[in-house]
Image (tube, rainbow, N blue to C red; front, side, top):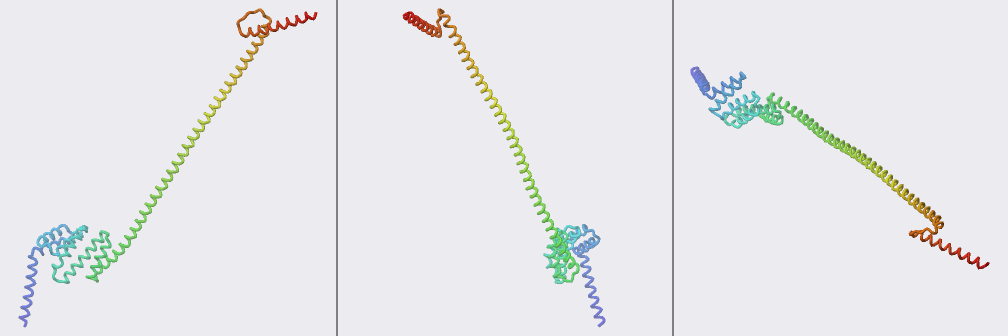
Length: 289
């Protein structure tokens, strides 16, 4: 009995040693182990290099892909990390054990949630945390991150609403300012137009007044000219009348004065008629005697 038990123990130890030696001698696991070592030393660049060499041997191994995704996450290259996590998730069927497969899927979802959280995409972070908790409801870290993501999402919405209100207020203020500026410009233009119209009207009125004044002066000058001309004509007529009277007074005294003017002829004719009447009177007187 004792010998059989010893034999069992020996076989078990040999099998375990064989498995360890085969894992140690397998270059895929060896490269993954060295990558993990560099990762713990925070040398993410060398860790990535070892994982990349391991994937050169087996590009579909979900654990090695997951490890390489962690180097992107630690380097804050969240977009690339998400791509690698999703690639690891697509190859989960490579793992035969359900518990081991679910455990890796939980880690992938948790870390994808962290990537979205750091990118301030809190809605996507919440979705991945909730999916992770379905696989491991007892994870305190995932539960904490979920609650924090919800608070951050609420705060983010408040900030977005505040910013949106500010933008709307700014837009309204800009519109009001534009409207006020337009109204001010219109008022200024109206005032300028009124001033210009007033100045034009004043200038036109002044020109009209000056024209009226000039017309009045011209009419006055014309009237004075007409009056002066009329006065001169009257004076000329009076002068002519006086000349005529003087001629009438002088003509009978010069009966024998011969002249060829029509005026003198008429006067001579009157003078002769006067002389005939005298002769007649004298003749009548003589006949009475």
